[in-house]
Image (tube, rainbow, N blue to C red; front, side):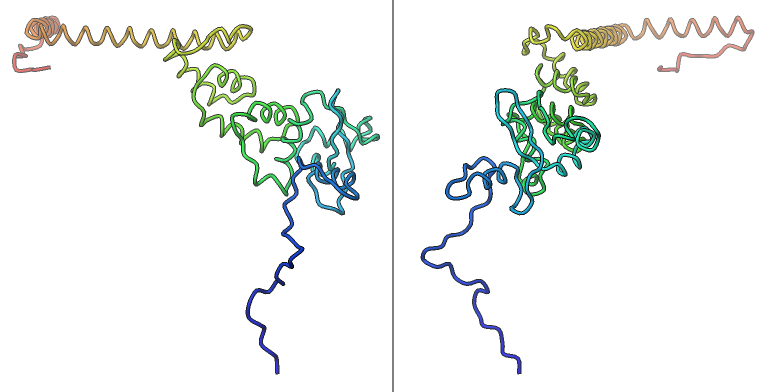
Length: 258
């Protein structure tokens, strides 16, 4: 006969000298024996047994060991570098000029299966993620940046960010909001951004025309309400003259209210 399984926890209890293993943190400094190789694995964000095979070089900022498959799957730019006869593919070393080491490390965490789900886009990393996802053509991350930007308040920096990275719907929304309350914003930040300044001026002009049209409509409405009988009598006279010119029989328009 099959003996029943013992009740209680299936895993053995932790002994007095043991403690739970902490999750790997790519920013945590490794210590103890074998710390050098362990640190490289942690910075690459991968488990033991899957060693990083590409070194990213940062000017005056050291290097970062990463996995070529992670980069190639996420970015067609990196895929072209690593699978062609380019110098980067042959040496397995890539020079990065668009970012600091720490900023790229944060960007790389969004690409890793082991850490991407815990990463969050925020106001502090939005600019960096937009720049790197746009340059390396990581479309899924750029889309997420656009979604986050859509939830932000309208400001000149956000207008410039949306314009620079092609978030057209968000850009148009922010331009309208900034133009509506221009006195709250520092338009000095638009120096050197002529196209954005022109879009903002065009929106201000459109708003001015709308306000003028509304003012005319309002004035006309007030005049008609105050001089209703005079206006309607002129309308009746005009209709009667039109009938006479056509030779039609006389029509009494006095009962027409509009």
